[in-house]
Picture 1 (cartoon, helix red, strand yellow):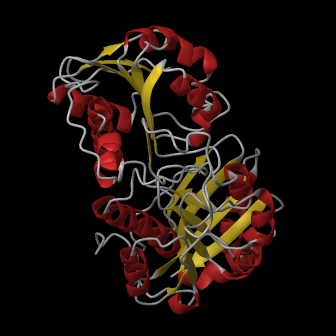
Picture 2: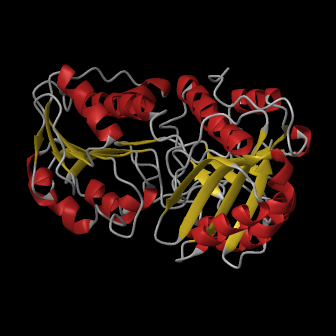
Length: 417
């Protein structure tokens, strides 16, 4: 069970069982168990939703949990008027239109650390498997072929690993690789602190030229699209290996297939692809199919029991805390605000609005006009939006909510008790 940081008050402004949570894509059962124990009504759906199912969810849900297959565009948020939060039970949030969510006052949470170790361990396993040709040797054994030979097999000790993107996963991979005797170099657009004996390179080209195996750990952005294409593959050492456990659009798979076919790249391992099936029932296609020197896995980098449970615990708590006390701490798209637990003789007002001059003055004037005693108030803003949590006299909260809702710049207002 997740830590008890989302405990709800004994009396609430809305019956907790009226708050609906929809968890998609077979999110770990611990998430549903925890949210149910908090009193919410939870619906679980095994795969990514159809368009009609997504429309129904938009009409009904107060909170949604997704993984990487569910896409939530701007049109979804225009329809989802009840929605307060989305939990991404994964690292990435690129499947969501974050600006559209923010414009409707919908907080988006993720789990940026929970599956770091799982992806790093998969990367190390692939490095070893590629250097020993394990995938090809296993397939031949299954065909009844006994091909005992040291040809093409290498220890990874003493080899150079090039890491593109030295963030959480990249740096973890660096530590594990160095422990196995590899020499590590890395390239990152930021000037980051190397761990162990890793050395930073000032250009991607320098890293590609000196690495025996290159692994990519960057987010999906316009800048990283086709980061590894024909030009970059040509720069890589002849006989080197490429691993992509980041995002499918980062590597040009057609260019990689060509480089593998001519033997310039000795092998590759990919866990992510530019186009991926929405469910296990759909077929998969790639220009890399049938290449013996390529390890293909179905986006399972973070799919370990340990990682999925950790993600479920972390994100479920974040969702419950938002609904129970208004906390947006660690939200990726709206201002982060948090106040301690609400006093039993007060109500909590949550006010989300456009960040323009004068709104806080209007809010405070409305409070003063009612003679409401404010015991706590915290505001944070980003360039577009502001979020205020305010604790007030319980007797004045309902009329105050109505006055705040009437403020022109208000996007959402809610009362908790």
